[in-house]
Amino acid sequence: MYKKDVKEIENLITNYFMGIFNGDSAKLEACFDDNVHIYGDVKEIEYLKSIKEYLAGVENRPSPKDLGESFQMKIIGIDIMGKIAMVKLHVPMLGYNYYDYLSLATIDNNWKIVNKIFTHVA
Image (cartoon, rainbow, N blue to C red):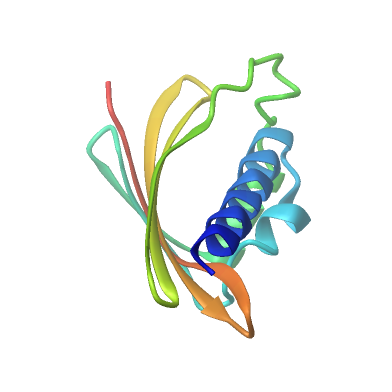
């Protein structure tokens, strides 16, 4: 069971990365539960958005791919306990050095992101 969960979470995170990197809001939206909120700290400015607001931002900015950036996003760690998990990611893009902490849960037998917190580290 554990290996299956790790693989499913890695697939979810790959879709998350590709959605962000390519500016593919449909792929990105499929990674999240509808009730998720996104909290962040970007250069000491607080960031709070609903999933709809977050996806609109992705749709209305040039993607890292379109800007010719190299893909450097990676999983730092995955911690699974039963039907919940925490994932730590490094997401450098668009001139930022983001670290994401994603809370995941199995919903209808699929892993979904239920909470996202992130920060930019100079």
